[in-house]
Amino acid sequence: MKKDIEKSISNLQEEEKIKKEIDKFVKLTSEFFNKENINNIALEEEFSQRNSKITGHLFLSIFVFGISIFGVPTFEQLAGLLNSVLSDKDITRQAIYKRITEKAEKFFEKILSLAIELTIPNVIKLNILEEFKHIIIWDSTSFQLPKELAEYFKGSGGDASNSAIKIQFGYDIKSGCFIHKLQDGTSSDSSYHNNFVEVFQKGDLVLRDLGYFNLRGLEELDDKGTYFLSRLHQQNGTILIQDFLGHWIKKDLLDLVYNLHEDIVEFDTYITTTEHRFKARLVIEKLSEQMKNERLRKLRKTCQKQQRPLTKRAKILAGFNFFISNIDKKYLPMKQFRLLYAVRWQVELVFKSWKSNFSLHKFKSTKIHVVKTFLYAKLIFIFLTSKIIQIAKSWVWKNYHKEVSEFRAHKYFKTIALKWMFAIVKYPDTIENILFDALKFISQSCIKQKKGDRKLPCEILDKISDISLSNPLDTTNYVLS
Image (cartoon, rainbow, N blue to C red; front, side):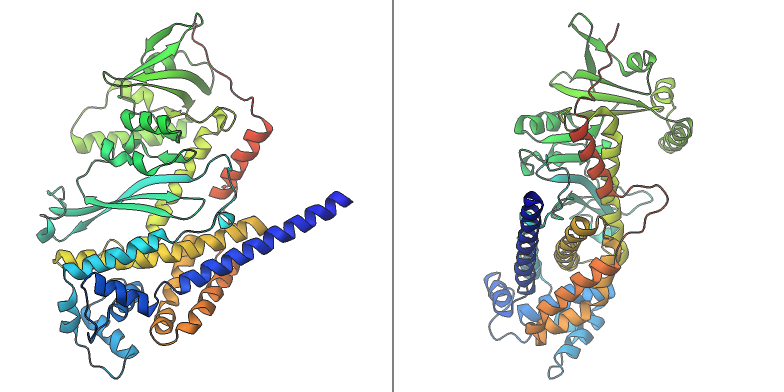
């Protein structure tokens, strides 16, 4: 009885602590567009002068919220929005257009960096897979730009534009924070440069698509104490497997699948190239006939497009999943590799939300400073609202074991963007209430609906955590005879 009372008191104290941290974060976010602070930054970046008709604060507010309202607004629409806020001034579209220079770009980039630095307190983060400090999904999204911008962002040409932009994103499921970098559309994900080893920390878990496979990058992650889970590139290097005598022998993936007697097996292995030798867990999983046929269909389509033959080797290997990881067996049994890897698709839903709700991929201008300013404005709104949404996600998961839909939550923020903008410009004392109302609405009305037996991301991660704690000895290895 005494223990139950103590537990109840502890839970109440923890809940009260979380509420206080949420209050502090909402207050901090409500002050993000503080007029004095924004105008001082605009002066420091030489975007505006003290007697400017359009202040840095006003310009930023109209752009960030105007773009979220209209998606791809015209300068006429932005001017109309600005004049509706300040009816005593007559601002023309030409006046706004002339202000978008390199200095405007740098000003917006500075504000974006501040939005990224806005950190969610640890007590508010999702309490899933506590073994890992962050669970980061790394992926990229790209889109075409007008051909006139090819000197700034190269595209592939041909049927596509000569100009394209790629945005590398690291998305932390637990905190909702993002890492980003702008690149040419032709930049290869698999290059060492795009493995971003320097941004990951000891204890982080990184989930990445096969397109990012790079042995040097994986080696350095392991050296830092960063965990990773990746599919294995089938043509990358030699596999070394330990035989029953303890000797390391070279094996091709075909050798391994020919000797499989189970649907899923695990090897302790070294994966090597002429420059790198890397120890990891290799898990091979046999696909169902339906999944294999679907993969073969896509593979044939790719080969036809690239005008190359589909080899017998590729056909055989298409029937298997190959995963490599340095995650300790007590945290991730081999049977959970595919389950955890499936969470990576969450970032695709994030990209879908950004493109659908905020037209992240659409630009009309052929002026580089206009494109970058518009892009930064969109990302400022996206990153700020994503952090507020993350608070709702953590609260709902902790208290009700349900998941918040980021897509629906972002759609809601789009509907209140005008109200939020008016509050920033004219009624700053009301911003905090608007954000608290948003948290309440999202927590109650933006809940994901389950479809059949399909598991949601947090459910998957929670299940993996339960399995690793209850059955840490599921570490069966398949030994070659």
